[in-house]
Image (cartoon, rainbow, N blue to C red; front, side):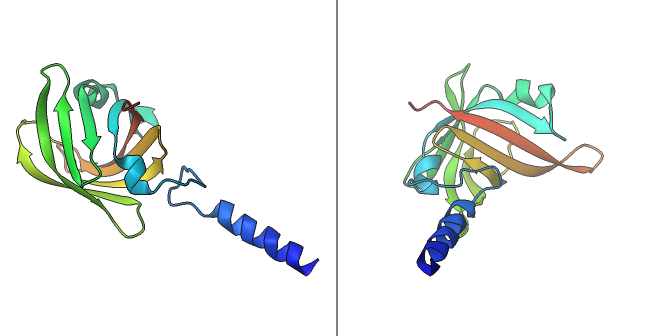
Length: 148
């Protein structure tokens, strides 16, 4: 009976531990492996509501993360690279930092994100941004994997 209780506790501990607020709770792939794909923006949320202005501006940008730590952001309509550089995750794998090498575009794009969901098919990242009145707010970007 004691062994069964220990087994149940270990199982509960295993399934309740998650790197990310929105999951997944269990996966065999490392966060680096899951992130290393091409990602297409599906939604931009501010206060849990779609921000159509930001979505329309950013929906044509494809993020590509490579396993060697390089990343590129492509502008789909012109088929050009808008940004490039290196990416890294913190030790807990829940904070993504982009180190830009080349800023080819005049567009602004944040360089620090909290990861709230990272599966093989979904990437949800949040960043703190500032409007023209210097008011700060949280933006959540939801991407889908298009590497398949």
